[in-house]
Amino acid sequence: MEKILETSRLYLRRLEVTDAMRMSEYRQKKEVAYYQSWKKYSVKDATKRIQQCLKLTDLNLPKTNYHLAIILKENDQMIGDLFVDVANEKFFVLGYTIDSIYWSQGYGSEIVEAFCVFMKEQYHFQRVICYVYKDNQRSKHLLKKLDFQKFEESFFYHDEGYVKYL
Image (cartoon, rainbow, N blue to C red; front, side, top):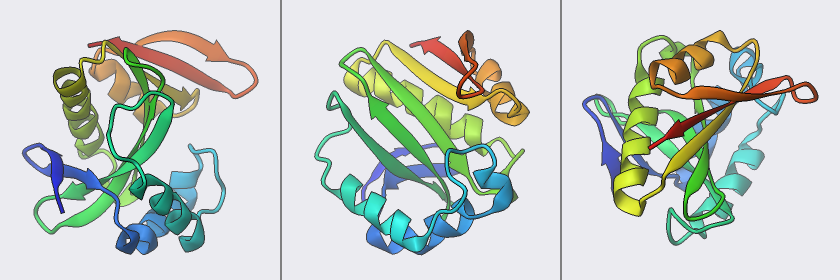
């Protein structure tokens, strides 16, 4: 298991098939799914997505998307995942899902900030975009704390777009 990046409390790695049960467990929680595009997330859904991600050879290939596991160093517990959608060689879209028992402890901002630095230094990306539902105050706070700027609102999806220039 190769670590992609490491912070003081977390590390990021590629997903493994053995992560499917854990990924489904926290994504199934009502409070977690509330701010996502799904209502239910089965082990089968997680396994299918992980198998797609295992085919990926590089983290900066345009027109690809993937998930990475967010791991708590102290116990090697998977506490969430990052979703990355590489639009082109200049920007990517980033999403994050963290188990609700780990909310409001700074893990989200810690891993998002570190990943943005990694993508800039490793692959020379210039911009990152995140979309959040309008009523997701925690996520909006996280993005503003990391100097993301709101650039659009969607009536249809009830979300807001935030951008950060790296």
